Length: 115
Image (tube, rainbow, N blue to C red; front, side, top):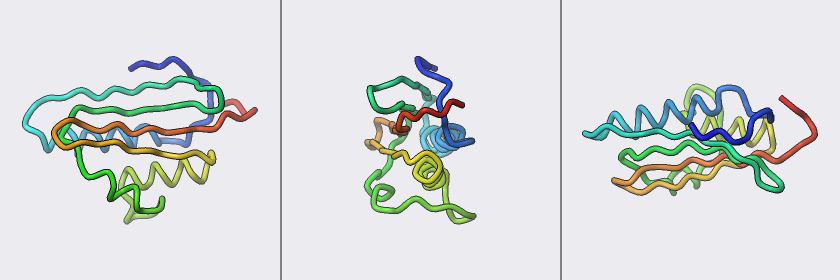
């Protein structure tokens, strides 16, 4: 955990979805143990929340091409993207490399509302 900023609006369970996804898809598929890091910090116009793992990695382009969705067919990444886009007008970026790991970044615009 590297939490430098807190007290801002974040969609419920969005970080849990990302950590769960990193554990199930990044770590369990690999043959080695790994690390999941959650961090948050503030930039001039947004809060940044990142979930990073050093697991197996995947083709992030496949997710970048899909719109956010919700419902039973939505996986953890799509559900988190949907929540961030619709609840806080934010964005989600994914960087992933096979054999290296994945970093999912939530961009949460700064607003006057507090958590």
